[in-house]
Every structure is written in structure tokens, then in C-alpha cells.
Length: 141
Image (cartoon, rainbow, N blue to C red; front, side, top):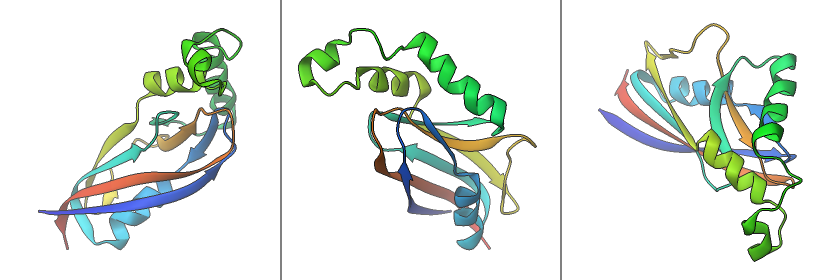
């Protein structure tokens, strides 16, 4: 059993920017000769998250609207009263979303569904450079 840790670096626009990282994660599994195991994808920081969706135009509109309903930007957050950075909603959204996801793989391919992609969501209120940790555990060729 081997364990390797890699990083994916991305630039985001913030404000619920959704980025498909499926191919980048898959490339790390295959280019590092893993055949069977699990890949953990982790968003470092407290204003971003990782999940899977069908990465299509309708959901790319629906997903931000969903978060606008459950953690609106235009209400008072105690975090903002403390730090005055206006991103209290970002922290709440990221906590709801979750920071990591584990995907099994077999024969060098992630076992995602046909319409299932891995997405990184940046909930912060500004653009940022983000590092995503990808830890692969499994058997190699």
C-alpha cells in the first residue's frame, strides 16, 4: 500500500465560484501509477468546500442560489462584527458544504457516476489563489 500527497493550485473568482477539478484529480491517480484504492480531496481553508455534482449550466446556477437561501450574504454574522471582513456567510457555507471528499478508484479509474464531477467551491467574498490537497492511498502498478 502506497500513500502520496499532491497539491492542485487554482485561481478562483470567489462568491460561490464553482470549478470542476475532476480531470486534475484523475490525472494524479493515473500519472502516479495507482490502480486500486482511494483518493482524498481536501480544500484547505475555512471558506471553501469540495463535493460532487453534475457539472452542467443549470446546476451551476442552482447551487449558488441554494446557498443564497440558506446562508444569505445580506444578514448580520457575528464573524463580520469581529473581523470586519464581510465573509461570515462564506464560513457558514463552507461548513455546510464540507472540506473533503473521498473517491474510490479501481483499475486506475475513479469510480464516479456517469454525470458526477468533483467540484471545488470558493465561498469567499473575493478572488483567491487556492491549494487543494490530494492524498492517494492504494496499490501501484
